Length: 408
Ligand code: HGY
Ligand code: MN
Ligand code: MN
Image (cartoon, rainbow, N blue to C red):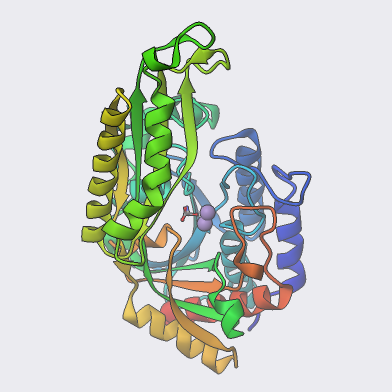
């Protein structure tokens, strides 16, 4: 049994039209019109394939194949993208999962266990890092959900309503672990290891821990022309001081595998001719070891405090989320490696420096990931690309991994 590459590539091409950007990427931020349209299209494709559809209260989509009793083998990824992202991140995993389930359905020989495709909401953290899979695994209280505001300033509750979801449903999303036999996610590597090793299949060993938080430097709004430099309490100076030291903080507080960046700033009131009152520095920091991650977070906050004092402004810190690093399941990894080997694919075992929904699913079920190569390691950019023969290799390894986990 093998997938239909033509059909899979046609789906990939069509999906990339939702939120298409001029330079060949996609912009499908969570619950945007493009994201909602893509989810609608995907639901229709699942319906066409005879899968049974369900949506939960945070917007996760589920498409089930087979009504055999007992826990299902889950597979899937996400459809939302980062701003100005690529057409493969998340989308490839969803479509390879759909193609695998469609191929199994068409074979007419259902495996002993049911299978379920899942499309997780807001994996890219517009509202919360790995929102949908966190909701499946641990859930959110109503007051936490009510406070969530996206990068675009929209409240999550309003975004859910725009998707036709009653926010009250968003507090009842957790799944009984007994319903999940195993979880497998196919994803682009978003790094250079596979390409460098000439390997087509990556068997992911572990997923990095990732933290998000916001440092807010507070000064005093003043006239940009008439206020003498020595009288200013300009928060931009504190933020600039912190950012200029960030690389050194990571080198000193990290363990050589740590990374941190600021990909987004917010300035208020935000006019060229006003000395800013407030600037928020949004942080993304990662390490495979939770203790190092927390030490790095502390070191960044300390450095920010020193910079604020040096520049006569104040600073506060608010942690957004801290998602644990996880080892992936030995058994699922062995199955992926066996299947790849039987299919004559070159493989490589490697850790993931990107966060994935699998790191939440690993908390409730044996979870594994299949990586396929990224050209030049590029991702979170329209330059994202994976070659068709690597897509075919990955999708067939996924298909037979799912069949084996489903008891065939
Ligand atoms: O940020 C990440 O690692 C993932 O793309 N959400
Ligand atoms: Mn991503
Ligand atoms: Mn992703």
